[in-house]
Figure 1 (cartoon, rainbow, N blue to C red):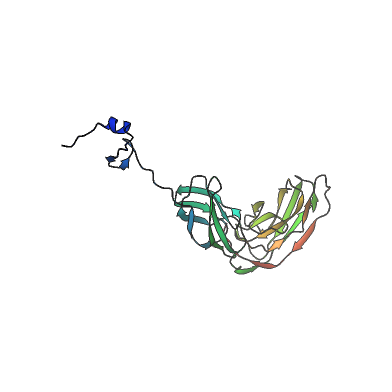
Figure 2: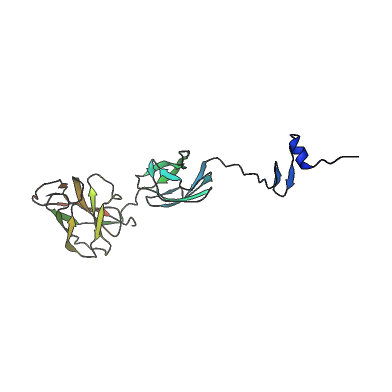
Length: 243
């Protein structure tokens, strides 16, 4: 005849006890096995190409809340971890070309999708546009007033805009902007940037990112005195880039 020993006697004897439950087998009542964490991987980016500010869906495994996303070494914005397999983010400003997409979890663990996203060049302008810009003064202290005048005699859009840029920066990297509100000519009042340096104004038609005119460079320096104005007219081709 078989003898059934009480559980407490089995424990005292050093024997392991297996409790069969709906969740599995454990060493004590109520044990629930924990699923193994999945490795951090980036498997796909949708869409796989686009321009700066494109909304991206990043697929993979092992994503954690607070993860960071970078494209071509530049941090994306608006990063949201929806689950351990889906992240949404906005592509940062970058020149045309193919870049790696990197997801980095809190703690420093990272995964890379090589060549995961391709930045496309801005579309070529559709029509010829002529415009001119003038700015005065061309040397100004930080925070000083600037007057920017424009003309566009060959037709205009309500969404033509004038942007302030650092000299040499991309048309996507504007520091500030004002619309012309469809005027064929006009003058705007601006405030010089707080950081000393070389700046310029650009005229961009129809809410696009292709400039058709640039002002002379404006020197912003602490304690500088205002000096004469300059005008630079650059006939170029303009087109819509989408804001």
